[in-house]
Length: 537
Ligand code: G4P
Image (cartoon, rainbow, N blue to C red; front, side, top):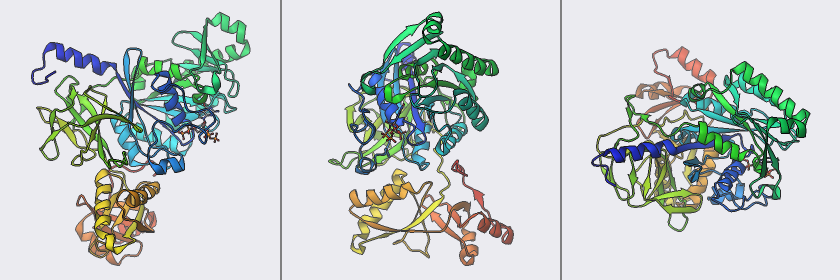
């Protein structure tokens, strides 16, 4: 299929394909059930025969999305990729996000590439720290959120109390699509409000298979479930009354959040979530460029790199750039233009990557994710296109809050050390700051969350054979500044100016008091907050 000439047939094919795409990420506080739900979704889509979650994390088969040694050791998922499957008449793209407690830039990058987020909440815990940060990031990005109350098979909070908490703490109006029948710990099924029917779940092989499901009319449900059914109707009714029911516009505008109930471990409510994605989640739509104009989905190919990852395949030490397709058709082998450099880029090695599984991909449509192997010239945020140039907005760097000096453990391996640090910076794993005073041998690494340092240490040891030492610096705050500040702040206690590799001057401060002191004593200095503050601040 050639996109040189956009025939009416091609235009309608691309528009239809974009309309079929649902591209989303599951996000949550660690342990709310993100990996379990990912497996359950894949099971429903029959990607994997049996969900691995039989007896919890320790006994279960590796989750399809884990691959790094460190992830396996720690039982967490650090890297991201995409899982694609068909469900009903749609193509679902589920992007994996890191599962650790730190808020990471990686999560933010994945959220830049999706059209919707599924927020998982542990029914017993309600809104946790990370949940709140993630709600805030979605708000900043204007990303619609579907909220899933998970672990309803275990004793937990009251459903209405959870709705109140969501309204009060996030400002989002909860709009129930399903409502649990039975209190937390006695999960009998859900009231499917769209179809007005009772969906009764039955355990099936401890969640390893799709749950057995039966459907009943409201009258049958009332007869069979008694108070549990009437309570569900009353409670959901109260929420609907105060929020005026489901409204797609307020969901897309990030003002309201559809609510579903689930037990990911038992596969309860998972099909209902897939149906909600198909019926209500936004399809791939035109994405604004830096100038604010939109390139139609049926325009010639365009996309942007949202993630770069090396070392995914230990045998090949490869380097994969993940691209979100924004318009047109991606065809393997096509030669595209890389916006930042203006150079041509051949897409010979295009793959769909999820965990260890890879498949050669020949074609992709708006909303899809393509992994380009050996794409070492591509960086996070790069736009790629055919024909008319387009530049998608940069994925902003977060203001770093943790700073550590890195030194090679073995001075004779300095070359490898340098190469490794450059590579990890290039991949966007860490920000690197330098100054003449500190010298090139001891760059300062800056990160949003401390976990990034462990990733760097691990990668330096295993991928670059350049073990290093890290030494924590007392700073916790950064501001953009100018070259003059370097001199002025060189004698100030609790502050220091370093240069980031993109040429920006960063003033670091021990704490907000040190910053205030400098602002008071040196009112002429430029000290600008960095574009995107981590939601923890
Ligand atoms: P995460 O990716 O969000 O970090 O969570 P993950 O899926 O790993 O799930 C965390 C724990 O919660 C796992 O138990 C998992 O089996 C359990 N879990 C997930 N969903 C449900 C659910 O719907 N109901 C119940 N009852 N449990 C669920 P684990 O590894 O054994 O940890 P733990 O339970 O021993 O702490």
